[in-house]
Image (cartoon, protein in one colour):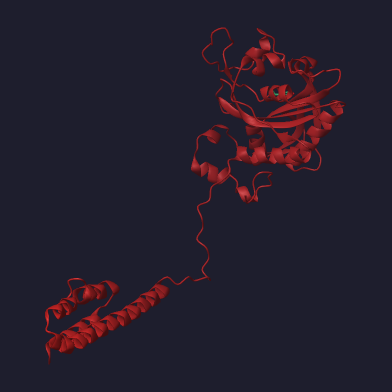
Length: 357
Ligand code: DAH
């Protein structure tokens, strides 16, 4: 066997023995690479006599071409095998059920915010928001709490350090300052709903220093107490999902409304839970009233031209009532077990902003 035949046999054997693309490339480099064995032989042609070159040239070229072809052929075989293997191992079984995605829950307060917004949304209210850190004007003065008035003290306010020449800022004690902010910047007709966090220095089974309220405000030309009553009775009926609600409006005092009324609804205790709508006991569920002319004036609205009503309610307690949660404190303990138990699937909720989006 000639030297070139021997080299050819060795190369072709090594090529068919290569089990994967990396091994094959190793053989290619060893034979045909810059410093490869066959490339080395090709270089010897330059130093040969013309006769020798005429004899060896075609032999070496043939050798190189056959080895090159063998590498190419083996390469396609190996690529095909690799693809086949991938297809076998990565096959997708379309009949398998999907893996369950980790699923969060909507906190009951957020759920109830959305339910309330959906109900009032149907009545033409839009949502408005304001800052948690308020100034004295928006939280108190514009709402007709005169300076030094005892009503201010009922709010257990958290004050910031006093600022020079100005009343200290406060953590808003209610969502009512957003009424002022909206009336200062928008012309009537106004129909807004204000969900938000509020703060008071209070702590027991039914009070936390941070809690949630929803405020409503309607300012138009001919709004009267009848609208207030109809709107709030409709709300309670929709919210508690009962056909009839026995309700009463009991005179009360708020500085920012005149007359003011608290709304009570009848309820029955059934075992540990409560049914709203009828029964032999009254429960207070919100505060309301006709917006005080001083408040309208403070916001640049003429009380001889416009009037309206407002209301405010504690959302945490409404959620407790509707969904049977006995204690307020776990609301804010970020306990995932509690949220899994009492929370809601966002896409199953009747909501304005929830759903699949
Ligand atoms: N801001 C009141 C509070 O926190 C609740 C309230 C009562 C709001 C009557 C109103 C209203 O807008 O008209 O106790």
